[in-house]
Amino acid sequence: MTNAESPRNPRRDELARLARAVATGARGAGKLWRLANKDGRLTDAAGALIRQMRQAVIERDPSRRLGRQLTAIDSYLRDAPLPAFKAGTFRDRSAALRKRVHLLGAMPADGRASTGRRLEREIAGLFADVIAEPTGDAARR
Image 1 (tube, rainbow, N blue to C red):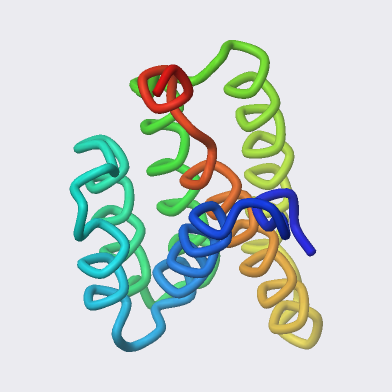
Image 2: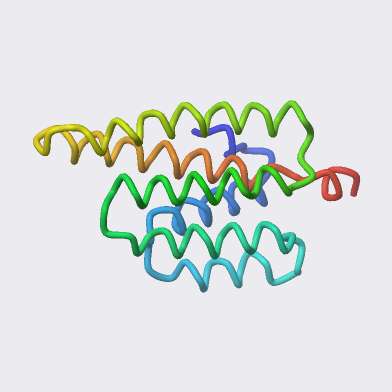
């Protein structure tokens, strides 16, 4: 169970599933987005982040694809009204993952696939945590 999943918060779990589907390029991610946002509660910034993540999936080179996903997350973190502590934690996680993504591009081909899949899961987990975190406006509701 990731930080984004909680037995007490089904909405957060729903957003975490959506985030993982988008980050991995699963079919039907657009339909999941429409279902999750049927009540219009997700911010425009979250929608932009999801669109950027979906666009990054089409990149063929794994290190560039993962780098684009981290860039999208970093951009969202700069603009989203998240609590400073949470945003800082997410930025630290993103920076650590970015260092590992740079190393992925320099790795020999025999170890690159498994490392790439592991990084993909970790970035999807970060994306899920970021998108499921209530922004300042949502936390006050």
